[in-house]
Image 1: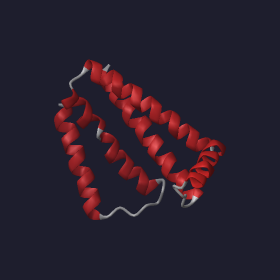
Image 2 (image 1 turned 45 degrees about the vertical axis):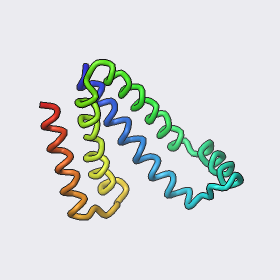
Image 3 (image 1 turned 135 degrees about the horizontal axis):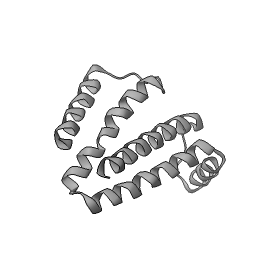
Length: 119
């Protein structure tokens, strides 16, 4: 059950972050003034993929809560860090972001940590 929850956390987190990044880049820069926040709220309501991102974030949150009920936090947090690795890879492939060698090595080190904790 723990690996099912970890998988749910990672997939939901990655999907949420990718959708948020995609949609917010399409929306452009937003103001944090009261009028700007109202406009941003209206913008969110119109974008289905952003609403899906919020739903994925909720799935990730509740799966994480279920995981920490069953497993030690010292396992749950590092195991869920696998999302960093997958997000870095998909940011390159899906969002066409430039990933520096230094960032790629950092993601690989995180992956090694996830493997060590999961073993």
